[in-house]
Length: 437
Ligand code: FCB
Image 1 (tube, rainbow, N blue to C red):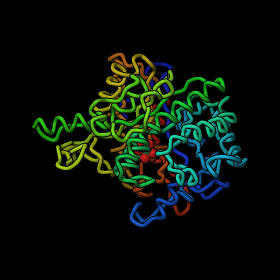
Image 2 (image 1 turned 180 degrees about the vertical axis):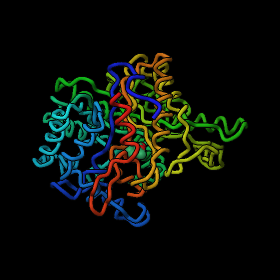
Image 3 (image 1 turned 30 degrees about the vertical axis):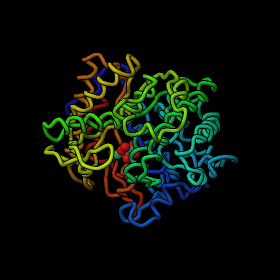
Image 4 (image 1 turned 90 degrees about the horizontal axis):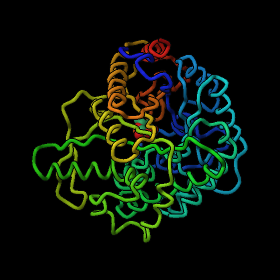
């Protein structure tokens, strides 16, 4: 790799990320059913109908996986806590085994000199709460606050940082408008409500964690660079609409106490009554912003109802996900978030990475080049004044890539899903070398 630790400021943190449902093995340890289990059990939703019951068996291999983080030379490890593992019914009686598991995980990080970066929710909603409407129901603010209280009363004294919800856009738009993720809805009213409630629940969790005396609390949003597919006025306006929905709605709520006009045009009639009154909760002060960034899209105008847009294929080299590689987008969002929204708050790249075909025992040069190119954009952002504190690779391990199953390999470490053997890839060794110098 071209870059090394010494290119970055002395306190800059290098991390790797995972999430609970994608690696733990949801069938173990008394976890309750989630909407991802039932989504995956419904034909047509997930490639090969794959699910997270065993995943990477991290539930039983946590120590080995944390050793891999330590040996890579990381400063921090970003993980998430499964709501249904802690509260199998979503509410009520906690599962002691689940609480013990996260307790051991946090201690395991600390013993290895890794800073534990916790995310409370990375997408596996307990089924009993999905039955009550899930993210469409405003009560999720209270359910989520209660979950936050239970889990953080146990680990909040030792985590380095915490964020309530991973990627509000995916939780709401991708899952309720596009239907690609659980609960698989395609309904504009459900979408509007989920988009607002996800921010409301975020705010309630921040309130609870402040009440517990925790600090270093943030929000993690995902971003996608929107090119207009051609020079027409219609395409440019469609790209701006896409940008507003994807990249500006959640930042607007969190940092400006408002939603973009371009989104309200379509969603205002479907937002819950009195939504404007929730900004005191939603915009509670934060300590940092997490930026997840992978790719760009080419947006064209399309006939039909709002948002009147579609995307078309682009010319750049693509990853195994068929996502175009556009590292400059990372610089764009770091500077845009800093200048227009977070205004001086520390920013952390909380996810960046690529899926590459099975690379066991082979070169993984595309992944190294991807990391290098994104580190270069992170450095450019620092030079341009962005208070960037860290860079997190997605993901430590090959894992359950949601609706696309186990064949999309984002890991620095290869996982054989038959035997659960872990094999560090060439990119793991290259990154270890870069971090050691
Ligand atoms: C992000 C998700 C993560 C993983 C990567 C590829 O949107 O946070 O779980 O699926 O994409």
